[in-house]
Image: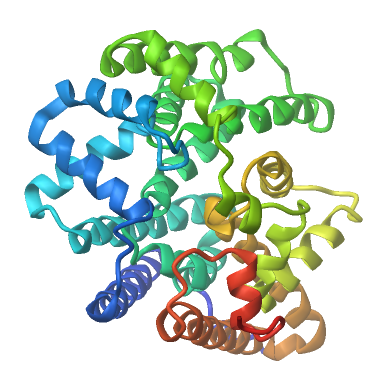
Length: 406
């Protein structure tokens, strides 16, 4: 007798499930906006100020933003190099109204787009079933749900970062001209939205070498040019035009890297070892983190590797170590929720097949539902009931009662 499949999905069914899950998430988060308290004196306040000023003054207002930033006594507010996000948020607020709430709705909208893009790429490389389950887990990620209700830029940059990552992978495989142009355009835009996205170039260069050495694929000079020279020329030219001169850009970059004044908040709450990110992900969503680490560790024991899996594992490791040189805050790594949750699904696939055999699909569905339940409780506890704004380790450890409240 043929085994009945509970997860044999058609494209139409999987898309309907995606739309249902995204809609449920959108509605739940919209209800949570009712009691939210925005931080006017923190990053949220600066983003609203920037978007409002540019919305009313247009591109000619950027030199004034750079001038104010360069003359400020404290240099740790969000820097005006994030011209992509400032323009995007100013356009959004010009349509819907200048307020913290509407800026938060931009984050929620961006999160919904991120979920749809995640589904598209996971489905393309890992199939319908894994795409649906991974995106269900991603939809109820405590970290990404929290960022989707704040007037910050973390949710807005994720769709662009995700597309940059996968377009680079596709371009390496196919080397078609239109894919090259598309990658350069999207990656340049990603850097304009969040300047430290340029760190992806280090990962891209590393993977080009792995791509050639491990998977015996050809490596060409153009592979390096499209991740360094071309995006740099585009971004540098746009910065120079918008900022009122290249000197303003250089001085702003210098302040970001070598601030004249210490950022006491970052020193107290954002320092520590590289594995702080793993601890924070564990505090936010322990089962996902444990399953993902188990999968990545066990995968390298195998003799046969899938290139797309290796790509995501190397991406995860690279970003954790690259961001070790900067202020450590798990919200800067919210993009890693996708590979972590995909790895968790792949690990659950293996475990349920070995343990439950004929009932493996039912067991897999139950496991995913349980993780969603506990993740949603985690989100409610940490970000709704306890009202955490910035998910740094200290706040998370207090909320989990690992260290006492002061």
